[in-house]
Image (cartoon, rainbow, N blue to C red):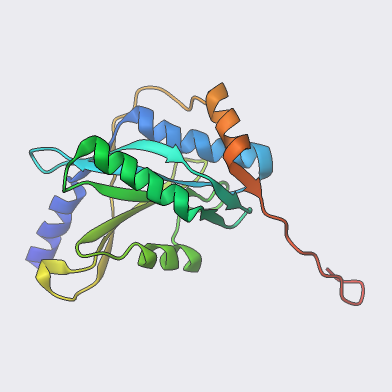
Length: 195
């Protein structure tokens, strides 16, 4: 048990995000909620430094369709994002973080979220982040091939944030939101006078 506890303590130290990038995620969540009462999602990079610490950054939203409880990224936009940043960093250790918001709900992994995390399965590990407007979050490291074995494990750990300023929604962010995010229509079925 001691080795596992030590492993988790070390894992907790491996991931950080700048305050500016943290507030960018929260700002996107705020825009989506204020404009349409929807969730929103995007991607980020996690680039390792020479000392093995991964810095989460390059926070972006992509073309997507959203509802109050779901968000769906465009596959071509995901491929483009990954290609751009792989070329930018030319770092074989780069990882990508799928992030999304739960606006006024809690920060937790829904069944839909678990399926999306599974879709990011690879030969090593993947990263996911869910936030809400209270700035609560869950940051997950999913190990898909732990120690070269076919063992899948998921750890919700700390994402170390250095805080200085607050949320800053820019005009450019507002424009990108309106350009890239569609409000999915929900079908309302009336049956014997009940919705």
